[in-house]
Image (cartoon, rainbow, N blue to C red; front, top):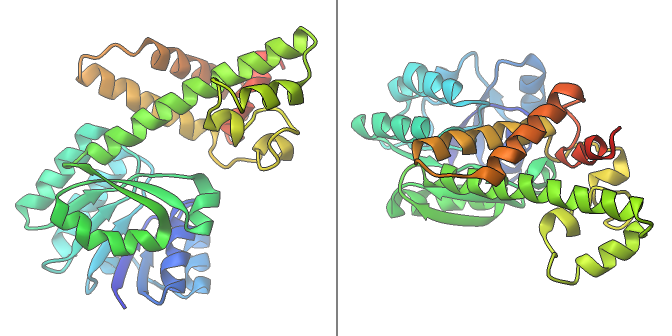
Length: 293
């Protein structure tokens, strides 16, 4: 049994914590939301009054926070001053590469190993314990963290040095965002030209255009039973979160002096969608904007 501190109990962090408790680990939890804390306590975690208390007396500290500014604040104001010597720190937030690497460097100065381990798989993957973790940090740190990550995920990949987990995550989601737009445009065009959606799906899902956005998250109802399109776009991954990741990708591209015109176009389209629609719906709902709805 490992003693774990968990800070950030939102739509992703909450289910991840539940899986750690189910696996028999003792978890101390903190979140600013009283409802999230109540759910953590009901799941069997020990709730604390603040973030500092959650990381005292534990072997591993896991964070799952909204943005880079929150990660920097929690680590510099709570975790690095209160975590036990030798504790392993794992940040599962999706944040900008620069902040991730800067906070890892601050942790190293204090003698801590900080892994950046953003996830892919959505809330369903968090609940089922089937997430993909893209992990940046030393090989030794990865070896220490993998048994914990294995409880919450199905595919744990070491991506190299600090910040590389974030690089992998934003590259993955830039591909996904642009691909979902292309899939949506194709289904709308096919419909207007009189081709049945199921027929298009049957062809494309088994030919050169086969991809995850089509096969698993088909943006029209019917062809892919698990797709949010069959549940009025109830989110697995919200449009707001996709826009966040696309913006992170564009920021990283600028820092790296890299041209990403398709990524930039995807960001612009999701920004337009989120500004004019309910951005809490699944990102595949962007097809409705393409339809003109």
